[in-house]
Length: 133
Image 1 (cartoon, one colour):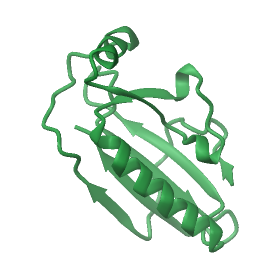
Image 2 (cartoon, rainbow, N blue to C red):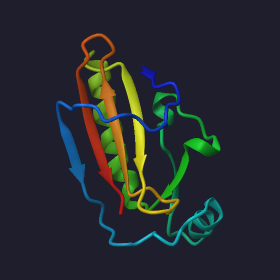
Image 3 (cartoon, rainbow, N blue to C red):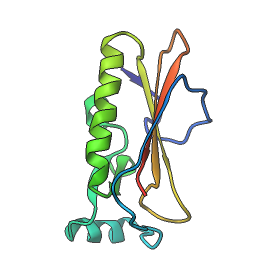
């Protein structure tokens, strides 16, 4: 599967054939977590988990620009999104994935992640938006 040049960079908005929104079971506010070090501290306390923005299932690497920290409620939601994208890829509906995090203020913890699966020839796309906090 192809990915954007950065794989996890910010993108211009794209039209979407379908948007899926799911809210994890957390009402936490991570506005005060403004650095990797603070996020790692919450990870050590079991309050956040390390997640790759661009999934390893599609070639994402565990390098600092691709690593974010999020509540563990995101993991199940993200796994379902990855399974959907894998099914679309297997069916030939998509061959490219762009992942775009969205942040509130200066927080290091993304508030949303947009997974934009598209087809490089057909031009169709589907966006899965994961609400984190």
